[in-house]
Amino acid sequence: MDKPFIPAAENNKQAILAAARAWLEGVEHVLEIGAGTGQHAVHFAAALPALVWQTSDLAPQLPGIRAWVADAALANLPPPVELDVCARPWPVTGFDAIYAANLVHYMAWASVVALFAEAGERLPPAAPLLLYGPFNYAGRYLSEGNRRLDAWLAARDPAFAIRDFEALDELAVRHGLELCEDAALPANNRLLVWRRRREAV
Image 1 (tube, rainbow, N blue to C red):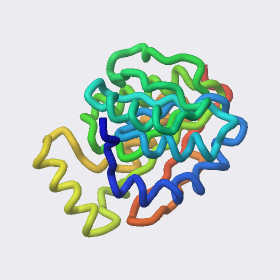
Image 2: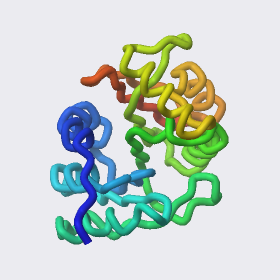
Image 3: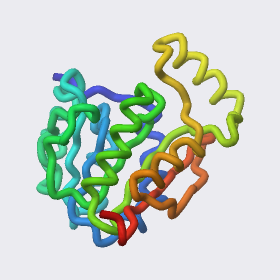
Image 4: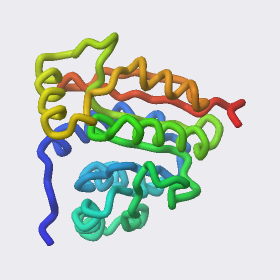
């Protein structure tokens, strides 16, 4: 099949990798949730050959990811696995980092809660959770473009929405994660990084 392609993923992959690289030092096995087309996975796995980059997504997305993975033929990029964040426990083990890009605004809030709950239970102490995308702060949009995106999301599915940073951080704390970085990236996006607290159980 032809490989699916999203221009935004091509445009933002280098900036995300530059911001995320320090948090992935020493990581052996990344689980990417909602890998979409697989473009980020191929770029990151090629740039970080010392770690295994495991893609996952809902079943309809897997053929496109498989096409990217097969074409890249990277030893550290295994075939994708089907993963629904609400179907707990997740069918993947052994990961010591979680990465997701442009995902939580395409989820119902219950799915966001499940993502953080599983991260808090399954990540090893000090392991990172990295989320990239648009976020609101104190209920305010960072740009008019984000406001339009939120309206488009609501029209597509009332359960979708740009998430408030404060609500996400509250979830993180509740599940044993602590904020380590909130980095500004191009196009009014952010990279949020939490780590599982060392004392979390």
